[in-house]
Structure formats: structure tokens, C-alpha cells
Image (cartoon, rainbow, N blue to C red):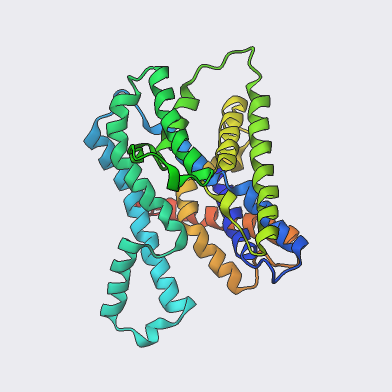
Length: 331
């Protein structure tokens, strides 16, 4: 689900920035699809938290396995993005020497060759701290994890209420950022759910209230400022966090992905990393043929472009993955 959401987000985002250039009701379709997709990255990180921590973890084996799994596809697709930009998107190859192209490739590995790859750099940072967190979290009591999440929530409180200039000098930096979602994902995946607690209803309340706050709040803020205001799109806003928690809990309880009838979604999950890496390249290609959020109408163009991108990405990754070497680089 998070994989599909991130594609919807990247399809609708260009229209969102065109506030004032489009009729408000057209722009608001982009706002809607963007709003309902904002949970994508937090849920990706929460799933990582649910899967990575293990009391039997051996640090160097973990790091070797994860970095090989992540680095090789990342390097391969980063190079593909540079070559696409140089040879297809801009024709810069006509004025660049081979050395300059190689230099651009090296720089892209350091700074990023496409806008969505920031997530991979962030993931590298999280992977480095996972073994350290693992030693604590697999032995921590529920109260100790609550304590960590409380301090993380406190940092979000200052950020969301615009109180960053008034926050205490007590250093809470170590409790900020995506590491909070990592711990939250582990906690929500391991907590015992009592039968008398209507957790599915609670998760839906979180999901719906968080999404509506994002959608309606962004509409109101943009109207008020007469420009696209993405403050509530922030991955650390309370509304996005609520949506992410709702989605995570809902699918944990419903056990949806363990249903063998959901073959398509199981395949998407299996190849989610490769789909994430390639999907922007597919979006760029589709856009060159006029297939984008503005196709006919955003209500049609956004979902059609998103699912077309998803299917093409999945097919390409599956084909590459059939080859033994391709399996290492496809993602």
C-alpha cells in the first residue's frame, strides 16, 4: 500500500504546485490525492522497524546483508537516472565529454540523481543506528519504549505548533526524525492487542481524521495564503502521523497481505524496493508521451497514470529479477 501511495504522491505533486494557475476545484483533486498518500514514507519506515529488530541480530552480518541488498540496486538505478537525464531528457551528452559524464555519475551518487532518492540516503542513516537501537529495544520494557516515544512526540509538539524558537535548551536532537517512526513501527507490531479493544475502529478513526485534517487543512491554508501551503504535508505533522498509525494498525489487524488471493499486492510488496527506485524514471517517460496528472482530468489522470506507472515498474523489475545478476541490481 505504501508503494502505491508514494507513486500517487509523485503523480499529483506537480499539479499541487500550480495553485492559482488552475481552477480551485481542479487543484483540489491534486490536494486530495496528495493528502491521502502522505502516509507512504512514514509507513515505509514503520514497516522497517517492524521487520529489522531482532534479539539474535549480529551487527556486521546485518549491515553487510542490508547494505548489499540496498546499495547495489541504488547504485545501478542512480546511474540509470543520470544517463536518462544526459541522453534523453536534456541531450547534454552532445556537449559533455566521457569524463564529464562519469564525473556527473559520481556526483549523483553523493548528492542524488533524482528527487525521490533522498529516502534511500535517509534509510542508510537509519540502518547504521539499527544495531545500536536493537541492543536496547529488544530488551526494553513497554514503559521504556513509551518513554522514548514520549520524547519523540515532544519534539513533534514543538515543531507542529511553531514553537521551535521557544523550545528548551535541553538537547532532544537524539529523539528527532525518522528514528521515531522506526521505534513506533516496532512497538505497534509487537504490542499485545486485547480482544475487547476495537482496534480496527480506532485505526480507521486515526486514518480518516488524519487524512481529512491534511486535505481540508491544506485547502484552507492555501486559500488563506493564496499559494500552495504544504505545511500539513510534512511527514512529522500530527495529522500525517495519525494517518500512518491508522494504516499500519488497520493492515496489521486485517492481515490483508497474508491472503493468497491478493496476488497482485503481494507481488507489489515483494518488489517494492525496485518499484520505488524505478517509478520516477517511468513517470518521466510517461510524461514525455503526455500521460500525467493532467491527462483528460485529474480525477482520471492521477489514478490512471499512477497505476500505469505501478504496473510498468513491476513488470520491468520482475523481468530484470529473473536474471541471476539482475536480481542483485533490480531491487
